[in-house]
Image (cartoon, rainbow, N blue to C red; front, side, top):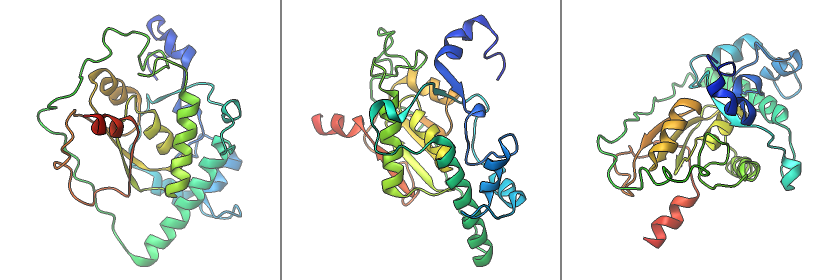
Length: 244
């Protein structure tokens, strides 16, 4: 994380965000506590950490990924009260099980052909340029209010409902700051892809969030290959499409 958190211009980030390198992570165990690394094995704690480390190699991640700090589920009475460490530990256990299953079947996972449109087309690309309170950099996002804990709660609830597993591909249409995909990447081990119409959000997500992002404001998603994703999530976009 250079120059964060030491440069003065990055002070607000240090006060508002936590680097994902300091958080529990489905794909990273070598720098975490020993009782987290054993999650590489089965649910009972037995397994082969080397196998999980090998599986995690090459997974899309960003060394500069940031997530809003202080997202405590208890403060919003989220029905999913599981800690980040428990979610990541379970994810590593699932990753190990998936690795064993893949080896037994000798199957190869297809690589998604993700290519952003040459023209971002319509959409409010600079929608929030005159609204500094609605910024990814201040931890409020485009909502202009501290709802990041609620957003994380919704993200985890959706992941549990869809039963997301490590290695699956997830598209977030209207990905905003990229926080949802970053939570899903760290806690569930998914490969995230985001479509965002606002250039400020896109720029932030590209630099400080995990996943692959496209700046695109249209509603025609024909440029995405069929059957590309295991799951698709969308929040505010659908209401905009209906109102349009």
